[in-house]
Image (cartoon, rainbow, N blue to C red; front, side, top):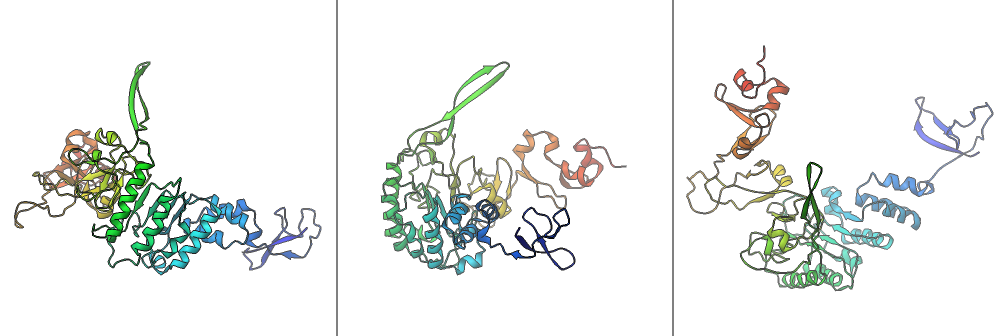
Amino acid sequence: MATISIEANTGGGKRRKCGDDGSPAGGGGGGGGGLPSTSTVRLGDLPDVVLSHVASFLASVGTTRFALANNSRATSKAILESMAPVLDFGDVATAEAARMTDRDVAELLSFFVSRTDLRRLKLAGLVNITGVGLDPLRGYPLLEQVDLGLVKSHANPTLETAPALVPGIVINILDTIIRKKGSSLKHVQLPKHWRGGDNELVGAFLENYSRFLERRKLVCGESVFTRSTRVGDKRVEHFAKCKNKIRNEARGPPHFGNAPLISDGSFRVGYGIQNRTCSACLKTVCAECEENEFGLADYCSCCERVYCKDCQEVLYCEGDGSGRWCGVSSCITCAQVEKWNFCEDFMFCGREVGGAGTREDPRIVEPNVSYCTQIGCNKNMCSHCIASMPIEETIRYCEACDMESCRECLVRHGNGCDDCRAAFGIEAVE
């Protein structure tokens, strides 16, 4: 029986030989000598299921490269089909992504779409491609999302230098996609550098894309309340999918419920942003659900993307507590990245609020937020939450030691004076 040479060191620095049944070669359980010959197993000789399992530990671009290195079309197809239909260059190290060329991108895209379906493409970090490398997507009908933002998720969309991406090249390819019969495109995120409202080519594409989205007759995927029934002693609420057709309409005062599908920049949402399509799950919410706050797709002004409430809660800065609106909105993830102060209901970004007043006027005084001042804790909470939540879940101020503390810090670390601990009903430390 042929043996397989295993390269792992077995402790004595010698190569160990194993038979097909996993037993040491020559040992065979009965002492009989096995065949002395060895055979080398190439990566391509392994079963598809093994290669697919190995690929599952790689990110999307790494998996595609792994499949590309395999000579067998059937095997490479099996590897790609084992992964999600997403090619996200945000998985690549920033420096490496910046070195990638149009030729590199075209090779990966051409290989991917020739063997399996591509539903989402994210070009994070590809700041030095012109867009020629996207040519394999010309007229490709299966693509649902194209993220041309060139930055990773929840990153500042403003680049230090203008990207090499050429609007004329990319938009020409996008036009072939939306003109293709049966096109699946739902979401396009344009680079920040293109969304100034001063590029006629970009403006013309957004108009065409908006009409395309309306022609697609997308259906609202929001779950809405239908009725309630009593089962035993419990009241059970029933929900169903809304299924309203998505229309491109703008009526009444500006808010998300009546916003057009593509923002014209007139109401706090950046120009060229899709107003009612979640950039994470691609669910589109109809005007009626928006007005009734079922879906509440909302805009994060930090990463400049729209999210539905199922994917990201979006908070609004409360300004300085005097009624001036800061204008900053942030999804929870961006607020954490920026290390802003926020809780379940409110956020304070710490930026200067625009509007009336002078520079000497303290604009961000944050009168409604309490912070746990114990070392290593970053918990903060607004006065509304403190008043409405059980005392053991809040933050309390102690006049004796002039500190604010949460109960968790006092219990876990034994911090705080006796008055601090008494406020939470914790026994004093002996």
